[in-house]
Length: 197
Image (cartoon, rainbow, N blue to C red; front, side):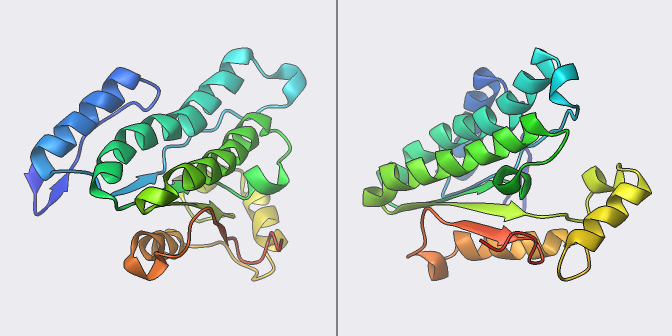
């Protein structure tokens, strides 16, 4: 239901039918999509020799192909309007790799390639596409890790702390704004200096 301009629509991004249905409902209730933040993500960690095909494929289907599915739906109305913003949430793991997360890192690196390809494809229609690459952020996903592993993450960050979700959100809000109209195809790290490159 719509309340104060907000519409919550449950959707499994691994299902084209559910994604198409969600966008149909959104556009019927609120109008064309102007800004898309593709943030769905899961992990199924494990070392490659022991990783099942399903664990690899499910992570890519959710994190990467899910991003493709929602972008494909959103960009249709953006192209007609000749204005839009797409922001993919990647990860530092997609830029530097991570032991035990080959599937996750591959999916997040894939979002960089997808985002940059779409940035080129849609630039003439005034649709910008950018990628935010968070480092270790204080979220439920990180809280689920053993304490010693969380401490290792914190020590690895030059700023010496975990990031806050609000710090990632602030970058997303900026990229969705008119202030970022001349930024497209960029990968913006929000990682406390972990990846300087």
